[in-house]
Length: 564
Image (cartoon, rainbow, N blue to C red; front, top):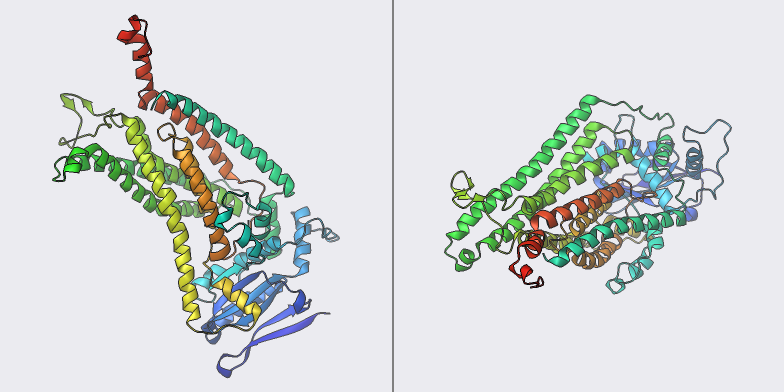
């Protein structure tokens, strides 16, 4: 039968009710997959009323809440009632809402997995509002709540089989992760091979994606339909905002995006100015090495400056892309994510490749000619290509940028969460208090892990897209790029596994039947790779001039020996 459970917290001897909780199941059968955290001092000030109001709204929607307090934090375990899952099944079958006499779908139609429970709770928590219109993020900003996260459960096997360096060359346990988370003649031949490989790779990826979709029974899955069902669970009166195209808003967004692209191109011009000034400075340097190796020093330092620019502009690009999406006001989360992906990748592409485009197709072609050189401000002569050709400049630039991204960025990506987690654990252990309640210990252990956000996996996708660009676009100038990417990915798979299982809170799972907009990004990169490699062979490399000279003007041609 239905019973009422009142949980009390006693700060310094004063007792008062935190929450009235309705429960229809025994304690042994309850599964707490999601936790909210608040600081204990919020129980003694006016913020407690706002906290209770938010939790009461969740209870009214059919969610059970369990409260456990620690020395400094108060933990609120949240789980959905069985009626919520029944409504979820029905809404997926009838997106417009259940009819008055509709029967709930059979439980076997959509199994209630841990992933499903977490998705439903997370969506409702993030979209739940108090009577004053305050969301969870608003309450976090005011200190009413501190954090939210799903609990790690059953990750022990993944720690042994996935997050281990000795399993680097083994196939990843994808199903288990799903249940828990989630310039020579050879240059032409190589460039043609890479263009074909990029096309074949995408086709193989599509076949593998179709195989996985069938294996995971996602063929008829519709992400927007699930989002609509979750909106109706959160608010039964929810109505999807009708599509209203605004030409003014679209024009403003287009202009702002073009301005950002112009800024990226302007950054490439700034790098050109730096290289010109650095060349003049190194030429008059007292250091013998710099004076003798001016071109090499300019190329190397220019690549380092470009890498620093990439790191800085990545943060700016993300902020700008987010603001543009907020200004556009898309109707659904999936639509917002798709448009954010396109804008962010576009800005990142120009950030990473604008300087490479200059080196490949412009460097050495606008210097003028002997006796009439092009000079910057009438003083400094524009730089020329390396004595061995512009391919060497492009090679050095790509090698340094890709090398730093694969080594320094990966090290920071792992070391920063590791150090942060150790510091959080040390601060927590200073109290010397170890909770006796095993459930509280588990919640506290999850709380001490590093927080995650909606960009945790998005950043991994973006990193892979940029890496794919480096291994296909301009690969004729840097044939080692695919090999470096292979070794980097072998290491990064284990780094990400360790980070996700040992160092970070559990990611909120997303159900999807493909990688969405990222597939169009891959196809776009493949097309650009064919065009860019063809132009590198035609305009940057010395292959065509050598062939023309060899078979048209070579003095050995008349002697019948064209192989010299």
